Length: 158
Image (cartoon, rainbow, N blue to C red; front, side):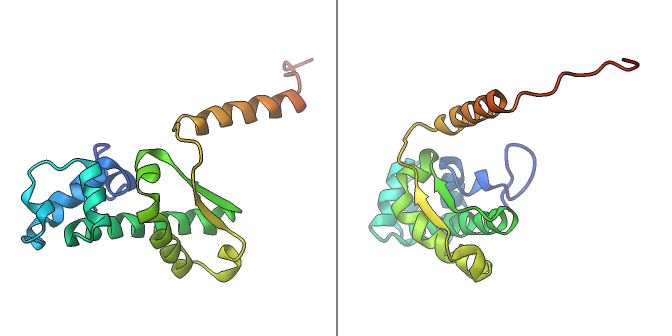
């Protein structure tokens, strides 16, 4: 996979983010010399997404690669956790949900057994602030601790 800023290769960030979308355009540019997107030195993420919506072969390839990566990631998580729903958000998830979700769900279903996907939904986030997930985790933890306070620690020998 692509070299990530963390030092590893093939991280989701290198396919499922603005950085990853740009890396995909750079990586595949020479394969699509007639693509108007390939003629642009530094396209914006918005321009790449619009090009994909307009059928530009380079942009479509990059988006399909991102959707496949998302589907594979969801398949791993689905097989391990058996959730009822995946909510896809973040900058790229919100900006490209129309391009990613259907393709990602098809890849997900291709890679897991029917009992995992039969009742599972993959949806775009309705909340546009990416920090909401972290805030919900804090709220959930606070609520859990309020209902289930930890037992007092016992000192050795007491």
